[in-house]
Length: 334
Image (cartoon, rainbow, N blue to C red):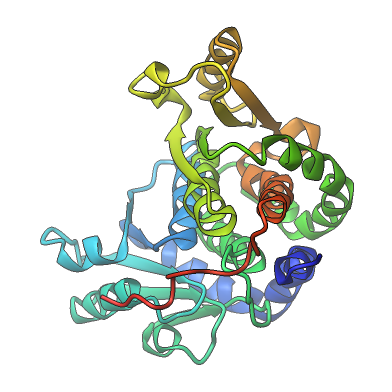
């Protein structure tokens, strides 16, 4: 049986291509504004929060920028917001996420420069932002956020790295524009392998997802939206370095641990945790960037998300679930 998520996984490369084709001039204009600010707030919820985590960690590995990641209502209620030469970038697939929309309105009240990245050009957030960026995916129906995730992340990376003084930014931006070609091959090549892995893990009910640097954002998405919303499995995201605080006492034989490894300097700890977990006979899955692409490791989330999407898709399928459906999301507003 084929669910809607299947076709949306396949649509990811073209969604990025269309977004760059339609929004490049706009993003370059916005990047020029960003280059002059002293403080950057990145705001999102759910899958969108994972993109801002990845963007923040990627930038902070190579440049000195003043960046904070805050969820929607935490931004709204924050009494220490700096409105002097600052910018707030809001991410939301729908452009109607209640807490993110409230935060946007608060930023506008404070006269903070506001940028919105959304897939719905007629949404409230796109209309109310000073600078809107549309992602061009077409309607996304599956809850997981596949094509909206990669295009949103693309836009974030493009405007933030363009505005930075990262010495290799021109090379990175060129690779970013070529990501769709890489994606197409990986989407085709890794489906069957991850289908088999999903069958192997179908009876497990709790998963721990670990990564460092920009891969923590992906680990967050994997646990919070892909496992829990898509496959209806319990999951917890962690920075790899936090393994020895808490999880080390629960990692034991047959506990599934998923590691994202891109050979960052901080992945020295990831590798140590992997070896420790092997000695415990834990059930380990390691997704290594180098197994899929020869690319700047800062772009790792764009690559590693693909095999993870196939794993989650088939994990849900083997448990009789549609990975794109929901039970409660969309019914609760507060």
